[in-house]
Image (spheres, helix red, strand yellow):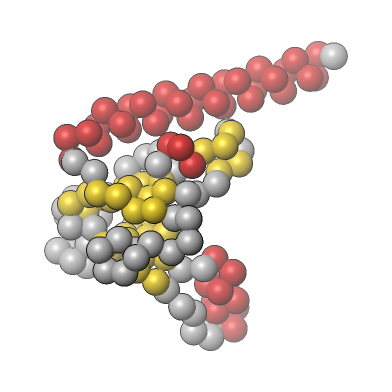
Length: 127
Protein backbone atom coordinates (compact mmCIF):
# COMPACT_ATOMS: atom_id res chain seq x y z
CA UNK A 1 0.00 0.00 0.00
CA UNK A 2 1.15 3.53 -0.74
CA UNK A 3 0.72 6.38 1.70
CA UNK A 4 1.66 10.04 1.91
CA UNK A 5 3.11 11.86 4.88
CA UNK A 6 2.61 15.60 5.37
CA UNK A 7 5.55 17.25 7.17
CA UNK A 8 3.32 20.27 7.97
CA UNK A 9 0.57 18.54 10.02
CA UNK A 10 2.29 15.13 10.39
CA UNK A 11 -0.77 13.36 8.99
CA UNK A 12 -0.51 10.06 7.08
CA UNK A 13 -3.04 9.31 4.34
CA UNK A 14 -3.57 6.10 2.32
CA UNK A 15 -3.74 6.60 -1.45
CA UNK A 16 -6.84 5.46 -3.33
CA UNK A 17 -7.45 4.99 -7.06
CA UNK A 18 -8.57 8.07 -8.96
CA UNK A 19 -9.53 10.38 -6.11
CA UNK A 20 -7.14 12.86 -4.53
CA UNK A 21 -6.84 12.33 -0.75
CA UNK A 22 -5.69 15.22 1.44
CA UNK A 23 -3.98 15.49 4.79
CA UNK A 24 -5.69 17.39 7.62
CA UNK A 25 -4.09 20.75 6.78
CA UNK A 26 -4.55 20.19 3.00
CA UNK A 27 -0.89 21.01 2.31
CA UNK A 28 -0.34 17.50 0.86
CA UNK A 29 -2.39 15.24 -1.40
CA UNK A 30 -1.97 12.03 -3.36
CA UNK A 31 -3.74 9.31 -5.34
CA UNK A 32 -3.16 6.33 -7.60
CA UNK A 33 -3.43 7.58 -11.17
CA UNK A 34 -6.35 6.53 -13.36
CA UNK A 35 -4.16 4.56 -15.73
CA UNK A 36 -3.75 2.04 -12.93
CA UNK A 37 -7.43 1.06 -13.10
CA UNK A 38 -8.10 -2.17 -14.97
CA UNK A 39 -11.88 -2.39 -14.47
CA UNK A 40 -14.59 -1.57 -11.94
CA UNK A 41 -13.61 -4.36 -9.54
CA UNK A 42 -9.92 -4.94 -10.22
CA UNK A 43 -7.31 -2.25 -9.57
CA UNK A 44 -3.64 -2.57 -10.44
CA UNK A 45 -1.61 0.16 -8.76
CA UNK A 46 1.20 1.28 -11.01
CA UNK A 47 1.54 5.01 -10.50
CA UNK A 48 1.17 7.31 -7.54
CA UNK A 49 0.73 11.05 -7.97
CA UNK A 50 1.42 13.51 -5.18
CA UNK A 51 1.27 17.27 -4.73
CA UNK A 52 2.14 19.92 -2.20
CA UNK A 53 4.47 18.88 0.60
CA UNK A 54 3.59 15.18 0.34
CA UNK A 55 6.25 12.53 0.87
CA UNK A 56 5.18 9.18 -0.60
CA UNK A 57 6.09 5.90 1.07
CA UNK A 58 5.02 2.29 0.78
CA UNK A 59 4.42 -0.68 3.05
CA UNK A 60 4.17 -4.23 1.66
CA UNK A 61 0.56 -5.31 2.35
CA UNK A 62 1.53 -8.85 3.34
CA UNK A 63 4.18 -7.68 5.80
CA UNK A 64 1.75 -5.21 7.35
CA UNK A 65 -0.98 -7.83 7.86
CA UNK A 66 1.53 -10.28 9.37
CA UNK A 67 2.90 -7.57 11.67
CA UNK A 68 -0.63 -6.63 12.69
CA UNK A 69 -1.35 -10.18 13.84
CA UNK A 70 2.05 -11.00 15.34
CA UNK A 71 3.06 -7.51 16.49
CA UNK A 72 6.30 -7.94 14.55
CA UNK A 73 8.08 -5.19 12.62
CA UNK A 74 7.67 -4.45 8.92
CA UNK A 75 9.64 -2.58 6.27
CA UNK A 76 8.58 0.68 4.61
CA UNK A 77 10.30 2.47 1.74
CA UNK A 78 10.21 5.98 0.34
CA UNK A 79 9.52 7.02 -3.25
CA UNK A 80 10.35 9.98 -5.40
CA UNK A 81 13.05 12.44 -4.49
CA UNK A 82 14.02 10.56 -1.32
CA UNK A 83 15.22 7.41 -3.15
CA UNK A 84 14.62 6.07 -6.67
CA UNK A 85 11.18 4.52 -7.27
CA UNK A 86 10.68 0.89 -6.30
CA UNK A 87 9.95 -1.60 -9.08
CA UNK A 88 7.40 -0.41 -11.64
CA UNK A 89 5.72 2.07 -9.29
CA UNK A 90 6.29 5.66 -10.29
CA UNK A 91 5.62 8.78 -8.25
CA UNK A 92 5.18 12.14 -9.91
CA UNK A 93 4.46 15.61 -8.57
CA UNK A 94 1.22 17.23 -9.78
CA UNK A 95 0.29 20.91 -9.98
CA UNK A 96 -2.54 21.66 -7.50
CA UNK A 97 -4.57 23.51 -10.17
CA UNK A 98 -5.16 20.20 -12.00
CA UNK A 99 -6.57 18.35 -8.98
CA UNK A 100 -10.21 19.55 -9.03
CA UNK A 101 -10.53 18.88 -12.77
CA UNK A 102 -8.92 15.45 -12.45
CA UNK A 103 -11.13 14.53 -9.47
CA UNK A 104 -14.21 15.22 -11.61
CA UNK A 105 -12.76 13.16 -14.45
CA UNK A 106 -11.87 10.33 -12.06
CA UNK A 107 -15.38 10.30 -10.61
CA UNK A 108 -16.94 10.14 -14.10
CA UNK A 109 -14.53 7.43 -15.25
CA UNK A 110 -15.15 5.20 -12.22
CA UNK A 111 -18.91 5.89 -12.34
CA UNK A 112 -19.04 4.83 -16.00
CA UNK A 113 -17.11 1.64 -15.21
CA UNK A 114 -19.63 0.76 -12.51
CA UNK A 115 -22.59 1.53 -14.82
CA UNK A 116 -21.08 -0.65 -17.55
CA UNK A 117 -20.43 -3.51 -15.10
CA UNK A 118 -23.99 -3.28 -13.76
CA UNK A 119 -25.45 -3.37 -17.30
CA UNK A 120 -23.34 -6.40 -18.14
CA UNK A 121 -24.52 -8.09 -14.93
CA UNK A 122 -28.17 -7.38 -15.78
CA UNK A 123 -27.72 -8.66 -19.33
CA UNK A 124 -26.13 -11.84 -17.98
CA UNK A 125 -29.02 -12.35 -15.54
CA UNK A 126 -31.60 -11.85 -18.33
CA UNK A 127 -30.08 -14.60 -20.50
